[in-house]
Image (tube, rainbow, N blue to C red):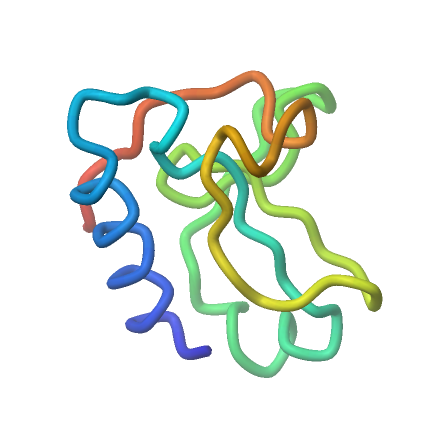
Length: 90
């Protein structure tokens, strides 16, 4: 997945959610070998350890056991908390 495809996926999940907060983007999972060569260009931030690394206000989980995708809040469960609203593309 490219950074542009990630942006499209985030926007698509948000649009499909409509007024249902549980269907909003809740967590971005990234396979570890994709992080450095592909996603290093993202503007991510980390305010506190509890917040974790975030892109467009959505928490990012990086692991060798994960596939690169966007999960809804319902699918992410506690892993994406604390949830925040998706910020616009910059």
